[in-house]
Length: 85
Picture 1 (cartoon, rainbow, N blue to C red):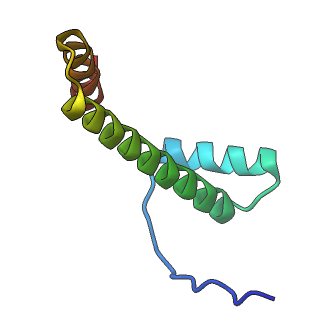
Picture 2 (tube, rainbow, N blue to C red):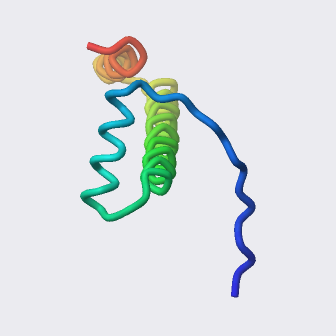
């Protein structure tokens, strides 16, 4: 049996609309609001890491591209990732 992961008690203040959405999601999934918040934070962290990884992979492709058309296309993609559309 694996050792239980250490937890840290953390207090956060949420806007009322967000808190309502969290409670509603938790109720639909039959989870506590606390468990729902944990899942949302974990998913958000994972998504952020994936986005960062995709950015660095694209930046590497941009740096190693030799074709001017490819450089321009990759540069535009990088611009969209950094500044939005």
